[in-house]
Amino acid sequence: MKIGVLRGKNGDITNLVNAVSISTSNGKREDIMLTYEKIESLKRTDLLIARGLLDGEKGILRNFTELLIDLEPLKEINVETSNVEIGKFGLCVEGSCVKIGHLLPIRDNVFKEVSVVDILDLGILKEVNRIIKDKGTLRLFLRDKSMGGPDPKKIVGYVEASRFIVMEVKAHQFTWEYRCSKRTGRLS
Image 1 (cartoon, rainbow, N blue to C red):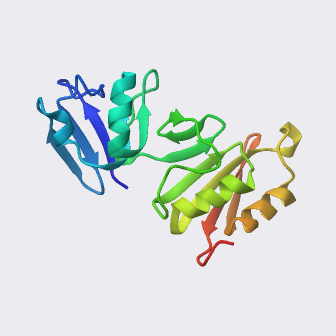
Image 2: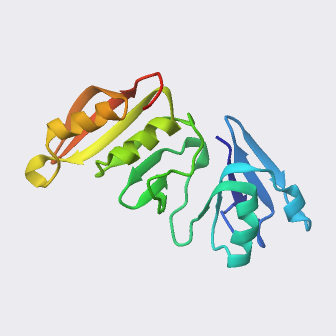
């Protein structure tokens, strides 16, 4: 997955008009200096991160990326060590979130690990199976049944129906973590 970040003079994440470089990460880090001809310098990314974008900039940048994240007013992230989490706030990369529906705007077999927090939905779990690499890990965090969470039998049923295998279950105060491995083969 190729992730790009628009950076200003001080290295901070910024909008297109103030960007002097784009840092990209696809297993290695690469910085591309932007000049007055900024659009010609942009390379296609799977995920592009900026801050404080104007509506016109959003329209332009959507032509260069699968998913555009405007961090305003979200927090700074480190794209080199980013983790993906899906929860009630949407798709989150290191805590910076974008609202999503049941179809995740991500290519197949991209992530080694995905965390799903406080959501038990078969459609979302099947989408996670699609975007996670073979032998990848799903970390499913759900509230305990005594705190309004789902029945453990229902959880295991959803996990198995979405082609994951429960490898380990851990208790974290009033939350349970189900660490699951992706089963290889075709998802029906």
